[in-house]
Image (cartoon, rainbow, N blue to C red; front, top):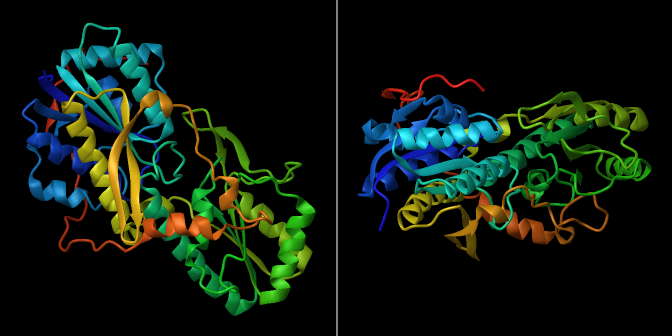
Length: 408
């Protein structure tokens, strides 16, 4: 028998251009389910869940839900809270106090790990519920799934931005080093090459964090490319380092998950190559635009993001729990996919890096196999609907707390 009660949904980690399409998919599917009486949105993800900061998403109107579907960043707010044992116990208390029988968490690896921990705890309690992870990350580093919603649009932006920056570099005969998001996985950095049509097109060199870079070969590659084309564009992951770790890429600070904050590699490499080549060097860091520049939304990415949210609700109400929704590619041209599931334990704590066969032999670029994999995900460009509200916010109808303040 299907569980009868309320549901909750939260968003976590770094936002994407399409994360709210997943939220819209959850909301619209939940409205069709007789088992779900109310759908509560947890403001700022796990933080809102622990603090009982909920809004009733069933009271939001259809126009607003349709509007947020195309808006970047997290409409419910986000967080980077890594729950400890006390937090997990509190979360279970909140679920029980608000009769929450379904929980959907939209996020990347750390979010899926948190969802799995909650699911394991729920199975030890006298409280039946279904917990389902909804994938999202621009890093495209979740295992099992073909790709991650959020990646396609970020890849589209990164590839486009590199082409435009290259025009400026070529006009001046300069060198340009561009830093791309990606700590351990170089999917987004590799995607910067998706805009290349001719040999002289940028990026001329592309370095993923999966490869060990020799400093001398790096400079030799830069020399060769600059001499050949008269300008040079290099894209590097923020997780880039030489074999001897000669380039410092961390600030000494850590984020809320305990990961070192990365950044600064483009400037360090730009200065290094400028001195070596004796030409003007520039550097750029695409930064948060990679995950929020909605004009670069891919229609495939939007469709996938909505589908995983919709599928999460339908599978939960059908009895599935402790799973993450996955995307399984059916064809490239036209691009077709289906949603399936994998256990959260198969995803939690694992990172999918770019495999060797997708990196070229020189380890300074990608292969055609990478292009064949990624290019269908970045097109066509989505057409944003007309007359959207300027800045829709889902914070109209707060739900009264039942357990009182929580001290973390």
